Image 1 (cartoon, helix red, strand yellow):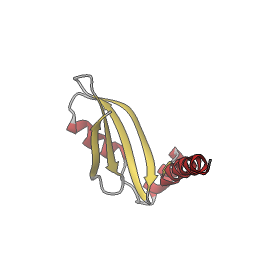
Image 2 (cartoon, rainbow, N blue to C red; image 1 turned 90 degrees about the vertical axis):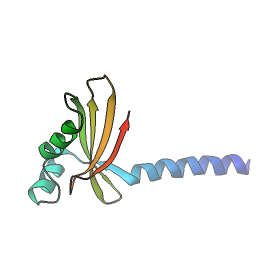
Image 3 (tube, helix red, strand yellow; image 1 turned 180 degrees about the horizontal axis):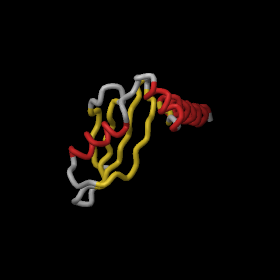
Image 4 (tube, rainbow, N blue to C red; image 1 turned 180 degrees about the vertical axis):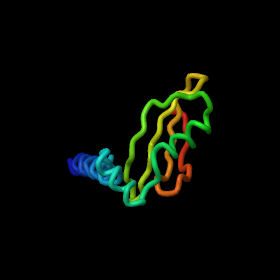
Length: 101
């Protein structure tokens, strides 16, 4: 019985840590960060992502904060029909992740 309780506790802790580690920012918060010069304009980073996959279509873009780092998560549909997920550091434009989704 103790093993079951420990497993349940571990799952709850993992779920809690996942929520704490990343949080989505709303458009008002993103605007304030942009106006203060903390993050780059979304348009600039979207251009960078679209230039990486010419002809692709934007599916989704959202700003997240993970471990005190602002990250734009961008999903694109390439001309080959593949969905790509790119994470871009919102403060400097550095590509952090590019994977097939």
